[in-house]
Image 1 (cartoon, rainbow, N blue to C red):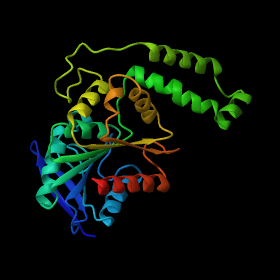
Image 2: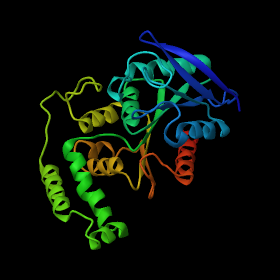
Image 3: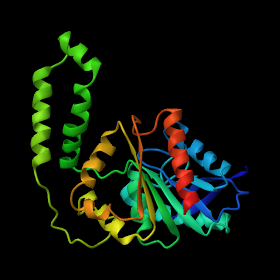
Image 4: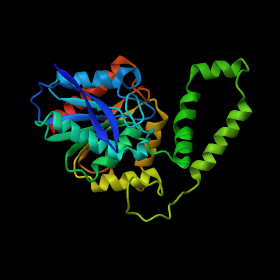
Length: 284
């Protein structure tokens, strides 16, 4: 297994990337799209370990830094501004490895959202892996807190011990729960046109993700953690408009990792995700 360090240009900035599996003969390669205030290593070295697992399975993989993150030049970008970075990264990946004719974008959290936005109109992208996709709205967050977080707290032994010891502010917790319940019941709508750039913030993220999934013609794997507020919010949004109908497509597969945290913080959870990714890419 050989690796290479390369640099590529994006909007006048120099971005570093590491490619694992230079000797791999597979024509499909995986490009890791970083999520959150992260760089190419990832939480708990997840992106390093995932890239090496893929390379060991014969699948080349590249991970890189957005502008302004890690060792990259330029001003810091968030996921809503990363379209140019991803586009340039795909080009750099295929330039270093011309045998990679098909690219799979792999993203965690808002990196997953950025990945499907980028893939929607890019024929180079064969498939997308979306791990705990970020579709945050105020209503969606409250809904997830009511149905997920508070439900898990009621089943927590530690919470009941704190309650019996008088260490829990019951009144405050009840007020917070009622507040989130009211917010979750409040309907939200966008006045922005249904079509338009996926990267514009005028419409809520669930609407834009639904548009991206309707537009995209490739395969999608959705990976969800069992103990994560972001995953809870996505599950709830997936059951109602505008995502409900779109997510019934035969091109979309689901993979659950029970008990896993948002960043798959144990070796067993990371290995689970790596195995699911390798199987998904292998079946393309």
